Every structure is written in C-alpha cells, then in structure tokens.
Amino acid sequence: MVNVGVFAVNLLIYLQDYTYAALRPEDLCDLVLALDGRIRYAGVYLNENYTYKLQKNIHQYFSDEENTISVKTEVVRASLRRYMAEKVGEPIYAMTQYPKVKLITMHFMNTNLLLISTEPDANHDDIIRKALELVKKYAPVLE
Image 1 (cartoon, rainbow, N blue to C red):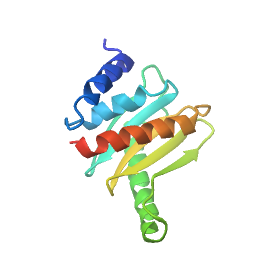
Image 2: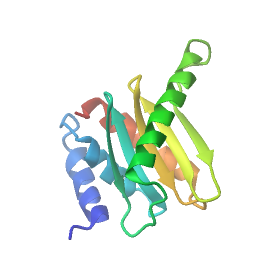
Image 3: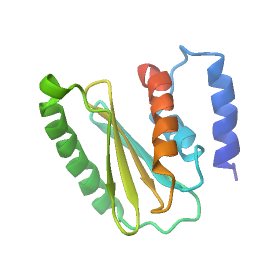
Image 4: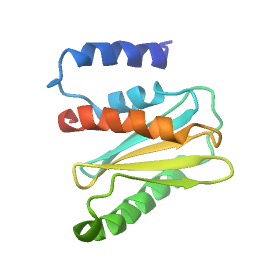
C-alpha cells in the first residue's frame, strides 16, 4: 500500500523542477491531502469533470450520490459568487463551517473549483494559504 503523504511529497519535489509538466486532478488531490492531516477530502472540478480523494481511515459522511449532489450544489453556489465579480473582483475562496466539518471551495481559471473538507478543529487559515499556493502553481498545468 502506498502512503499518500509520502507519495504526494515526492510528487511535489519532482514537480518543483518541472513547472510546465502536466498534472492530473487526482494528483492535485493527493497534494492537497498531504498538506495537513486534518484534511478529510480533496476534490477537483475541472472542465465539468469531477475527481476526488479521501484521507485514509476517516468516516465518510456522504454516500457517493450525496457527494455528487453536494458538488453540483457547490458549482451552483460558485456561479452565484462569480455573478458579483464585475463589481468586487473574481472570487478566491468560500468556507462554510458545520459542527462536523469545514468545507472550503477555491475558485480557479474562471469555472473550475478545488473542494476541501477538513475536521472542524483544523487550522483553516493555514490550509487555505497552502492550498492557494498549490492552485496558483499547478492549476495552469492541470489536464
């Protein structure tokens, strides 16, 4: 069994030398999960396709069908946030806190999203900062 954290760190080290290399959405999910052990879930909505990964050994709150509904709902919310972009600028991220999880949605390249779920006690400011760095660096080379 491959340790996702070790794999992601090795992938990150490799990619630092090859900024223009293509990156698959599932690889970005691995990189996000490796940022912090309190991250439960990472998903990429890219060009109307969706990929996600879960942290190992966590209790999954949503079934696959509920996850799909949640993603579709977030896509609609994101489009509503973009509606105000002409006046206040493009959205960067949004966060919703529930008793059991924090949900973070990051916007990139107009209509694409990075979705992150964390434990409720996670340091969301730190996770958001690190994830924004990943998005800035790797969003242009996602395929």
